[in-house]
Image (cartoon, rainbow over all chains, first blue to last red; front, side, top):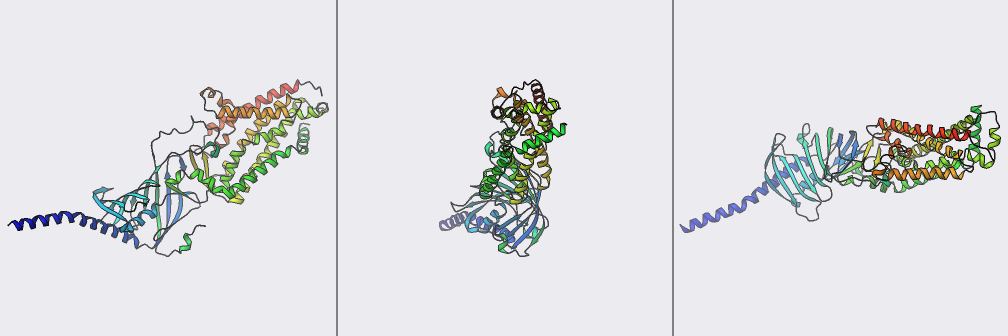
Length: 235
Length: 280
């Protein structure tokens, strides 16, 4: 009788200890499946329409073309000056592809824009990693990232919302909305040669961190058509 | 007779070596700026975009002829008045200094006509300097650096204007710069009526511009009431054409204030020149 009770306790302990391991394995499996879906895209080119809404910056929406090749080759071709979130196209997919470089934990479930998602936290294992923390909202039915929040040492926090339509099968979004941290902007008057602008007429800065929004609409995807590595070399 | 007198004044300007100091100075300065930008332009750009590049990256030809033209224009517009004053400050006092004013006034033409023909010749010289500035800054800049969107630099932000939306802004911008420089030319011409040598009006013109610029730059409430009426405040009105949306009210106000300065200064010059004793 006593022995049977001991066995019951031992089994309970093993069960309690193995539950987080099993959950972590399940989370890693989910990330692996998301990554595998994106990995089926060897390369792509896409027409983009970029709309920038940032403090300290005024510009009209522009059209450009983006080229991507696995793992991290990325190029923007534009006749106009284009502003794109730094590293955002490449960083996330590169990060989740290497499941050994981070610890992933499912924090719970949330509904994002009507889509039920698994909320997963990613903590890089390396101290030297630029990424400090990643939060991913994953549609575990379609195996795509619906929303991400990546905090990096160099670029602050970038919140991205993805909308999928035509290229859902490849995990490629049709609309990406980036929200980036913008620090205080000030060019020395000597550089701007803006000598007659007095402080009274310039925009007052309240000292609070500002958010900038960049909306990228992606159309006319050309997937796995083959792009040479040399194409990505800078001129 | 008036047009002939204006033509004669233009010939006089053309024959004076100092008239080429302005053109030569502009050529040299722009040459140096273009050379420096070709070598270190990317560093200059990083000073501007560096603060935003912590969160976003800029793609495309940022360092282009339009940006170079804009940078040169805003750098030189502070110094070109000196080059204009070299010539226009000498128009009356130079004649007095050389002793030719007595001969000039014996011609069968009114003093007013002589003064206005000198003013018109000064305006034409200013137009040539502005055209040369435009040619060197924008056209040569485009030849060397290509064309592209323009990043308009302001101390508290950036405005990016698209390539197809720039040429007309430069045309109007240079037009506004011309009006500003004509104000300086008129000031120098007016001061020239009070002097018997050329140095006095040129130095005084530059002194006034320097003083007004310092007063305009100082963020002291004491000067807030006079700042809007100083012509130096409105000399930067050409920048308004590079705003989006364009502040037409400000452009109109600046144009009227500059025109008012020109009218008042010409009035003073006419009054003084008509009563001037010719003692040389």
